[in-house]
Amino acid sequence: MIIPSPFVYWAQTESAVSLKIDLKNVVKPDVKVLENNIKFAAHGVGARGESRYEFNLDIYSSVKTIENDYPTTIRVFDNRVEIVLQKVEPAWWPRLTAQPQKPAWLKINFDLWKSEDGLDSEEEKRDVMKDYPGMYDKLHKEEMGYRREDLKKVYLKLYNLFQFIGYTYVLMVMAVRYAKLDYDSVADTYEHVGPAMKFLQLLQYLEVMHPLFGYTRGGVLVPFLQVSGRAFVLFAMIEAEPRMHTKPVVFYLFVMWSMIEVVRYPYYISQLYKKEIYILTWLRYTMWIPLYPLGILCEATVILRNIPYFEETGKFTYSLPNEWNFAFHMPNFLRVYLLFLTFPGMYFVMSHMHKLRTIKLKPKVIIKKSK
Image (cartoon, rainbow, N blue to C red; front, side, top):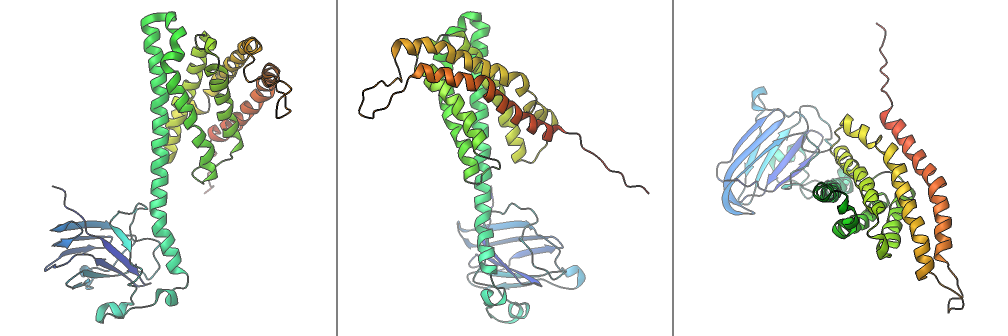
């Protein structure tokens, strides 16, 4: 049976911390205060009705305890329990908990901000705006920031995990079909994994938006060019021309793309957890050396094969006269695009990745101080 935790509202002065436990009809609470920990248990009426409530908090810094002849002040009211902890060293704590993560049931008490004397004697309230100018806004932002920070990281972890699973699925389907049917499976690659690849590719536009909203660091231009380049090949070159669906180059292109992503997304997840896994980092910044040129070669092959198809069908080509007085010849655009993709585009991407690899994999220099 899981014992619920009550809502706890905390406030502080430079010398004391106060906790207001939101429980009614408490008779004899069981409170244990250690130097860096407080445990509370009591039977009362809280958010989940009448029940036994408990919590255990590792606090930010040391407080005085009964061992050093300083008993904790505990006051029981009809609708709450108040506990006062005296700090060993007077200072303003940036948070109550020792760890950055805050329990959902812990809140900041904006209305109750009392002095040490007021807490020990009477219900005297202090004006937090007067005693600590600007501190109310600061604490309010920190309180809201807990949830925003947590939700942001949870979202990024789920996004990267979903993309990893998606590209792993694409690779596994292609591998299993190739193991069963050998080369005969290549022609049906787009039929079996094309919808999944299109969905995953559209989701990657979220990675262009992440830096805009401050979810990740880095620029917008490079991810936009990379994602849009892939989207152009996938939707305008392969999806729009049914004759390309059965070409072997689609199989090889999907293999290149998926192999890159099944390493990239786990690497991002490890960074969110602040875990440096060297083999994962090495793969992330080394596998691109063969895979990026091969992927660009496959993309260029898809475009090159499409030029005669678009010459024949006239798809995406607009000729004069028309109401916009605008002409666009898709095969000529593909020739120009192919020219820039093959040489300047490859150089741009490879140079960018080389710089990142140099930074990430450079040897650590350890400076030893002479004795």
